Length: 238
Image (tube, rainbow, N blue to C red):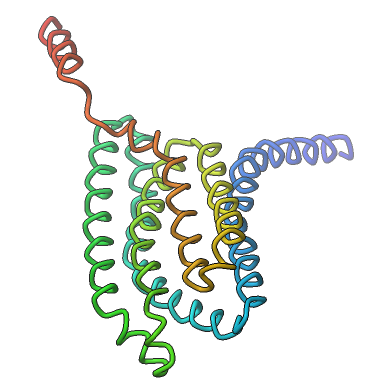
C-alpha cells in the first residue's frame, strides 16, 4: 500500500542518515586537514616568485621537492599499512599489541628516514645537478628538505595512530599547525633566504605538527615498573 511504501522510504532515509553522520564526522575533518598544506605551500611559492630571480628559485625548490617526495615514498607506504593494522588491533581490544606495533613502526620509520636524510645530504649536489649545472649550486635547498624527511615521515606514523584511536581533533589541529607555521615562517624567511627560506619554513612546519602530535607518542610509552608490578599482583591474586 501507499502507507507501507512511505514508511519504508522513511525507514530507509533514517537508516541512511544514521550511516552518513559518522561518515561526515570523519570525512569533513579529514578533508579540512588534507587540503590545508597545499594552499600554504602555494602561498610560500607565490612569495618566493616575487623575490628577485623568483622564478628560478621556484624552479629550484620544485626540483628539490621532487627528491624529497621520492625519499618519503617508503615511509608514506608504511603509514598506509600501519593505519588498518592499528585499527584492527584496537577494535579487538589488543591495545598493548597496538602500542607495541606503533613503537616498532615509529622506530623503523625514524631509522629509515634518518638514513635517507643522510644519503640525500651526501649526494645533494649531484642529484640537483641532474636537472642542469645551474641547479647544482642550489643544493642547499635539498639539504634542508632532506632534514625535513624525518619529521614528515614521523608525522605519517603519529597521524596514523591518531586516526586509529579516533583522536580526530588533535590530528586536524596538527595539520592546521602545519599550514599556519609554513605560512608564517615563509613570510619571515623567504625575503632573506629565498628558496632555502621556503625549505626552512617547510621543515619548521613539520616540526610544529610533530609537536602537536607529541601526546600520541607519549601515550605509547611502556607503563612504569610500579604499574607493571601492580598489574602482576592483580593477575596472581586472580
